[in-house]
Amino acid sequence: MLVELGLLALCVFLPAVIAWWLVHRRPRRSNQRIALVAALPLTVLVFAVLPLAIVSTLLTPAERCGVDACGMLVAASMMVAALSPIPFVIGFVTAYVVIWFHDRRSN
Image 1 (cartoon, rainbow, N blue to C red):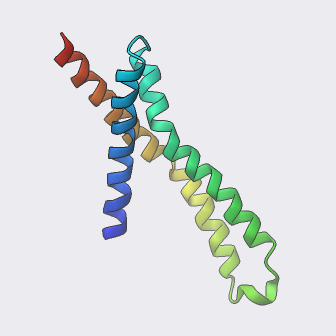
Image 2 (image 1 turned 180 degrees about the horizontal axis):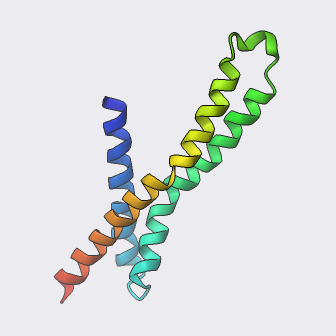
């Protein structure tokens, strides 16, 4: 439960901080572009780690896998890849809310 809450906090706070930084650093950029760029790092990190897990599993000899442990890791990696748009959408919405509050406060 604590891990899930930590991941949710990461999905919310990382894009919020990046969006806040980008709004102050590049004020002329469009809101959509800032929100997309702020939501991307976590998704890119997930997609960078998943191939490493799959390749390491495929290179592991069958004797070390046990009772289909390697197959379960590959299946879990595929499931994480299929569910990775959810943190992206959460990050995009969070970043857009941060941008909206900044624009509202500026005017």
